[in-house]
Image 1: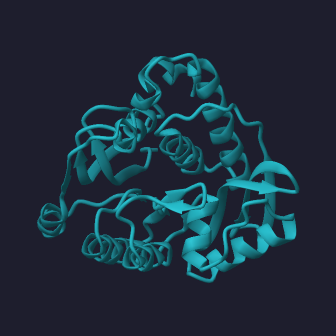
Image 2: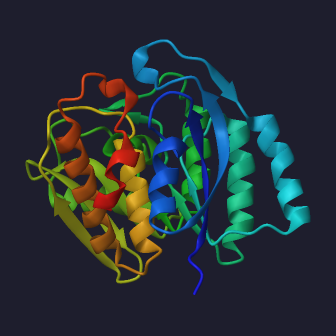
Length: 272
């Protein structure tokens, strides 16, 4: 049986293993036919402080009619960084149309971290991301993004499990079927919390933190998660596999001199 075909809708960095550059090798190695639609071309990871970004909205607008004419289709679409409100509307409309034909939609609503929005993210961006989440089979914001999407105050001191599940349910009210919230602190411990639409259950998966920051670890998490889910593994199993791989890769690379480049994923594909 042919493996599912996946479309990655995310930015493409010229220098650094993040977004499409991190996800594509992982999903290809896992045996999936992987295609991409860049939402922006970025000179390098933003951590360097100087960068150049080309917004590809006009290009995207011209791509969908061509693909439609040629009859191209996918089994799954994974969305990440969205460069503008107009772009979000175009992509959400395409995802909604594809979802109605049974395509699985995975949405990583990339907007911020550690209680703050990234530069350039506005209220209209948040509203556009709510649209994207509304068409998702699964969305996996971090805690910051989940708070902004649901207009919930950011819990800097963590949450109880009950409060965490309340936030997950507010994400579900936006229209997503299954939800994960990453980078949460639940009862004093780092955790990923979620709701599995297939079983109707909430769950909490704790993890240990390595105090090192790499850009692109969220994209690695996303790719491994999707790869396992499309292999018919449960949401809980797939999430744990993704968490374990990210931990292992950070641990193996924690002494790297230039962490802004991200993790050189091609060196570690055999770990998948």
